Length: 123
Image 1: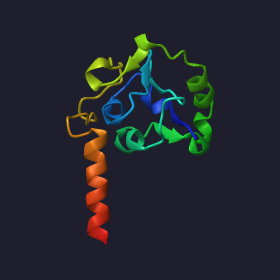
Image 2: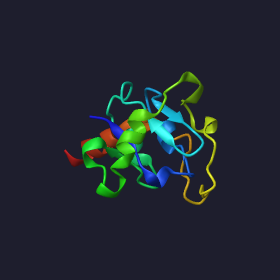
Image 3: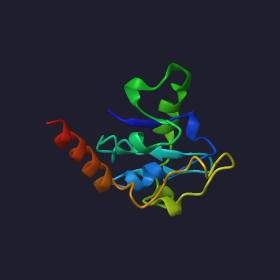
């Protein structure tokens, strides 16, 4: 299983996903972000925080964005393009500060804590 970043990320790059990733598997080019499938641990943290719903499991990518599976697979993952925190990501021309939610609380640990709290409250 791999996570794929699709069309809604084009020229936006909100970077909430980058901050939420516990293994730093995000990469960037001029247009969008990418997830390295060799490094991703399939934790789903990124998909849950994406403000434009651009991240999908490869088997659930909408038909209209199926071409992003190949785009993601063909991307050249280099250390120069690796991004481990939101401030490293350049905003695209479609970036809207009203839609951006990247803040210190969107770390993997914070998201895991919120999930655990909800699970305990349901017990």
